[in-house]
Image (cartoon, rainbow, N blue to C red; front, side, top):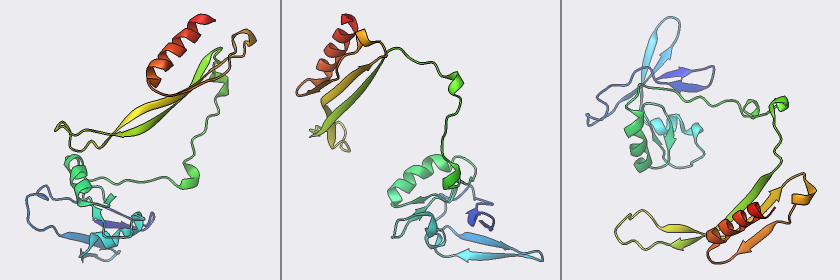
Length: 182
């Protein structure tokens, strides 16, 4: 591992291919100076890169990408995919430079008709009959709001709002009836 003073971060220089086959893992940090290289033993990698996370407790670090995780279970799941690749470094853009903008308005094509729909759902407890023990709740659609938007006055209709049983079926009936009416 090496210090990148420009970005105030670290990068992986070498990762042993036997990282999971050994009982102990040793992390070394290389300190460069023009005359010589100096290796330093990193006793606690979590403390060294704690500034990457707002999590206030002990964190778990991926040795391939130096990504910080709050639990060892999540880290192990991540490492199965990450350690297949060579070491890499995640670099996030500056917060003020990462705003998405659209300025090609000449390429836009206005739509004469479009629908705006919003669904609401509730969480129903799931019966764990042995199919998936991690499934706790099921989303059930409880209502919707549907509004047809158009600049043509003779096709404009008020928005429809529905809350009750069989909301998806009611939405399909309402949507297809409204499309065919006008």
